[in-house]
Length: 186
Image 1 (cartoon, helix red, strand yellow):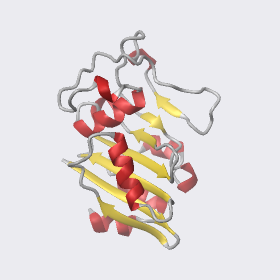
Image 2 (image 1 turned 30 degrees about the vertical axis):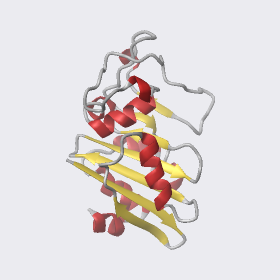
Image 3 (image 1 turned 45 degrees about the horizontal axis):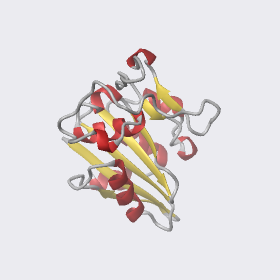
Image 4 (image 1 turned 60 degrees about the vertical axis):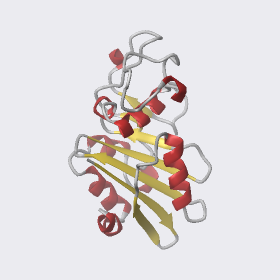
């Protein structure tokens, strides 16, 4: 079972809404939902959680590219919404994936994910480089994947985000100061 919510930052704090993922097939669909929830193009944070197996955080700031973090990429890749996010982070092309429920985890034509080692603002966690074995094979790592710094300016450091387990979304909501609004939609 999934839980998904959108938190939109406002002048007065955060507004939360639960999110139906039925019509979400791509990260673009999810980002569009987040932008619709935004107040004056301010920050929106989307949470997706699957029964303590993994959680994902997607941050959308106005028209900037979304920033994504997954707590456990290999576990997420086994579910439809987690696979959608994992594929995006690993650089798999949507056209390569015919159906979210029938995943081919043996590889991708795109090769390794794009990264700029000199870009401190776009820090990506990929804990097991052995998960990548050759240009034609790209498997999700058995740990975190994505931008672990995406909430640092909001009060959740990279170290704190990487250490989260269990009820991670509540811990993040506490740090953001929006526990009550998140629990209202839970």
